[in-house]
Length: 93
Image 1 (cartoon, rainbow, N blue to C red):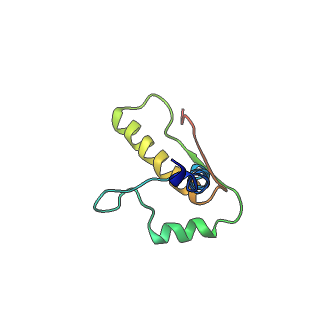
Image 2: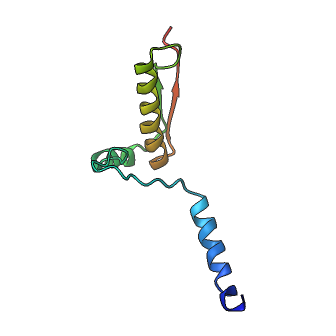
Image 3: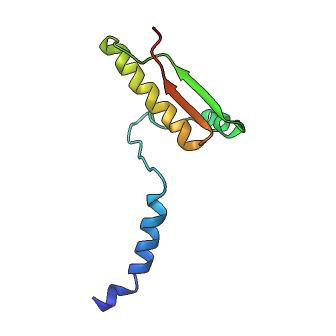
């Protein structure tokens, strides 16, 4: 146990560093869940707060609910890259 005790502070520092950021691994062949270089450049250029209103909230058929979830996933990736990007879903009716 004493042999490994010197690694505990390093391990603790690593855990604290990683805990502050969301990490995801895109294991798809076509990198479906990874933002493209062009998308990353656009998010980097957003300097003022950007508010995105998505009209996909409410009682929709299943294919619209799937679209809403995929849209939420994509917008969350944008928000992680640039915290100035905000989005919310509203009912169009």
